[in-house]
Image 1 (cartoon, chains in turn green, purple):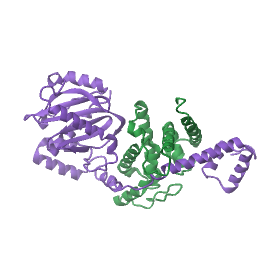
Image 2 (cartoon, each protein chain N blue to C red; image 1 turned 45 degrees about the horizontal axis):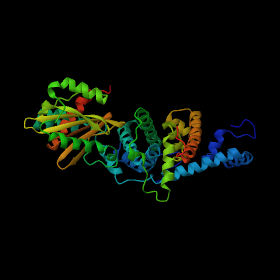
Image 3 (spheres, rainbow over the protein chains, first blue to last red; image 1 turned 90 degrees about the vertical axis):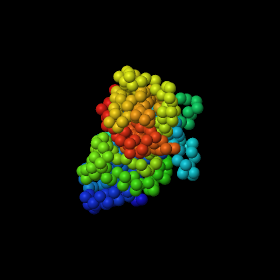
Length: 184
Length: 268
């Protein structure tokens, strides 16, 4: 699935009143949405769950879509769902055991321990920092786009990006010595 | 962006890593990095990190065979039922009995018997636990419950306190079921509540309530095993499961009625 750097959605010219066109556009976005949801989530089931909630919201709110850049709009909805969940999870922070070990079986080329280490380090980022990092690094959005999508100043995007990168690097280093030192 | 010709800002380093700079700008930053090995090391670390992240999540950018169903399942219902289907439902309900229409009209969510199963993994334990509880307690003749219907107010307070939730005990008498009582039992490893109902023939239903770790909402879902059906849904902090060995339509009405009456409850 191809999507441009600035994510001009496939639905630009679609007539919002034609239900099938909108649904087709959403369908075409599913791979991009799936990757983004997984990059925010703690595990595969958690990612699919976030994806489903997002699709549900996108379809329920289709009347509110202004007709441009469906991808960015759907990503914004996803980002907000992720932030809300994370806010609630902070009050009930338990993670189910099987979820905590959400390793994808398809990544036979990657060392599963390395993958798990990365997941653990990502889980230590705040919801907002994680979203900024993923939107910039994986989804290729420009800083101003991220600022618009998250309704924050561009300076905040930059400081979150900077802290996310450093924190992730630190967490990966910490995790190397996890047997000797309990992470705070 | 630069204070003087020979300085590079933190923002520029990020823009360099993220490939947002023009070729001359890149050249200037690369020259600067050569003279600042510590920052160069950090930039290399960020580049490697970005590469790792992209690879790590790349395989998820795929379609799934359930995607089409996921989208079309949401089509007719998002929000409230259309007036046409509402009329149809009321008409159908009148033919059967008034309570049926009521349940239909109040059910704000669609029933998704064959929704894609990916999301079910996370909450599949709720119907499973509900069915075990039903199997164990509904067949128990002497002590199916801990507190009986004769102490309904006490039951609501007691279970509500353990669940940390202002529990309303649904009145299912319009559907022919009266409260037998309730008990405390573990759901997802935490205190949960089970309510038991019985009709005139001794046919039993259970309603299970448990705290839901990842607070959110779902539509009605159905799980069935060995003739025992469970309608379940999650509404914020609480997961609900209605279980019985009764006709599908009846169980659905019970679930709709419970949903409607629980809506009056609020997290305490």
